[in-house]
Image 1 (tube, one colour):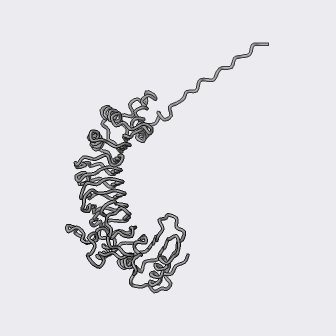
Image 2 (cartoon, rainbow, N blue to C red):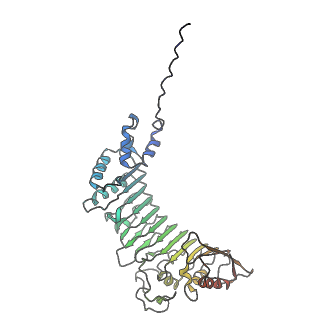
Image 3 (tube, rainbow, N blue to C red):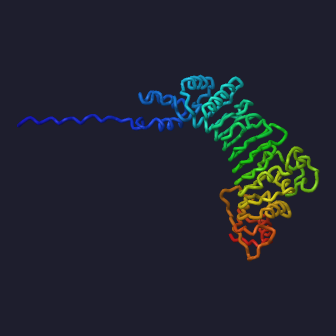
Amino acid sequence: MPPRKRRKSAAPVSVADRIGDLPDSILHHMLSFLPAQAAVQTCVLAQRWRHLWRSTMGLRIVSLDDEEPFEFQRLRKFVDHLLVLRERTDLDTVEIELGEPLDDDSQPYVNLWVRFAVMCKVRVLNLESYDSSLCLDDLPLVSRHLRTLDLVGVTLQETFLDFSSCPALQDLNMDSCSIRAGNISSRSLKNLSINGCWSILDSRIRVSTPGLVSLEIVDFLCRTPFLENMLLLETAYVGLGEDCEDVCLSYDSGVFCGANTNACENCVPIEEDCSSDCVVLGGISSAKHLKLLSESRKFVFARDLKHCPTFSKLKTLLLNEYWCKAPDLNPLACILKNSPVLEKLTLQLFSKGPNHRVEMKGHYCSMERPPAISEHLNIVEVKCNVVDERILKVLKFLSAFNICFSF
């Protein structure tokens, strides 16, 4: 028997670096999503990766140790070397997230990192610190490229919040920030969100953003900011929470002392230098979509209604029980009377949502539309958990306008 031929062994399969074969621009973009420490470590993967981290499109400076106490000095040394070795390419995004309180000696380094980001023409800048321990320098932010600024747990001072030297800034988000300034001003800003922030000043913060399209102010812990006219405003959500200091000292079952007398030192007067008698409603009167929520004892909306402006463009309106607690429901009647093109009204009564046990939809019982409210109003919703005397009172009020409800 002839000897059997030996089979040729299969050629070894080469493991291709498919990710490494991608163009530099895509790899730079991918590395931008990694913390800076992890992005630098990719240099050991292969020759192809050795220098990619030096020219990423984004920079994330974050604390990585979840179990051990965060050591800022270690992070500082790493970032110092990183900024020296990194190529001077432009940055799309910079994120600085600090998980432990900063001491006074550490503040200048973080402020220096922020200035470095601005020098690299950053477009999106995110800053987050623990318990508002990061205090940004009281220096102007000067950038022709910055479009989005997200601030979480940061202490902000007067000059920094003057964005006149940031002509491209469109989005400003402030969450749990301490504000040491009397003004927030920007002519270019389109979207502004202030959530859970507070001021250390006795006077109201003045918000001057004439080009604003979208506004959200929720749970401001001190005196409600004074809003200047926003003629281009599309949507606004203002929620006055429990910690708002604008509390009527003589509030009684939906009646504020400032509505009739000057008995309460909190309700009146507002600041003498205000150009309007309204704190909030005058500034947002041009909006097309409004969501206005308030705790019972807060007087701002009720006081503004004394000088109630006309909401000439308002199409959708969402209100809570604050507007329906007065014996005559005058706050609700006033805002409906001054909304001539309103199309949809939603009343979210004694129910936080988003799920409500009872939802009722209203419709006109006759073709005749009462002149006291908008002839365009075709959707009326009442959302609550139970239909009790308080809800029946509102339904009776709306029935006077020929609006009937079905469950």
